Image (cartoon, rainbow, N blue to C red):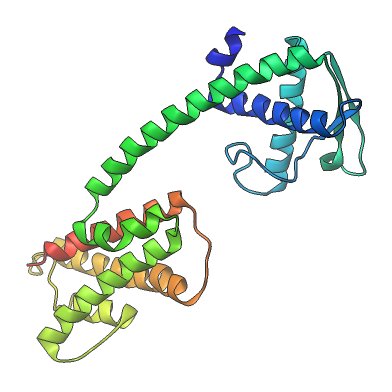
Length: 257
């Protein structure tokens, strides 16, 4: 089965997804194997990253094509659709020869383990590069939370750290204590800044100061505050985007005049 090794990950997972469902049904009801076109419990998020009508249709399509592929390659003998009340409730009745199917599934299991091992090794390398790029303070407060899969907490910690560092600088200069958006507007104000980021005698310098003030205050309003006050779900990709922003802002503080 040369196609097992040559197939791209997305189509491989689509076929593997269907085969695992068939195997489960074989164990429960070997004489009549029926699988749903839209599976309630998603095994591979690559095939179903978000729940939407378009994604449901796409997931059903990949499973239909995968089943057709299994028939064309002799892994199953035949299949026929069973209509439901809605297109997402359709099912497939599968006919197969047990030994042929299980031999193919064994090969798929071996290939899947190889791909998972390779993917984990690549992810580990990318992860190390990612943390090497971030400001040490962001790594210190966020890395352990991120690696424990507490992605929202890792982001909240990063922006709280920025707030804390700016708060200390402003209090040392003014004797007053501010927080959040008010703190950032006070610290980076182009008219009377406490933290100067560029040459304010030039138009470009003033624009940079104004722009970063808005980025700092916007980050407090749109990222830190919602995370601090509400339990907002966040995946790893979105957390990475926010952590890069937090790192940029932390490096910008280090560059103050």
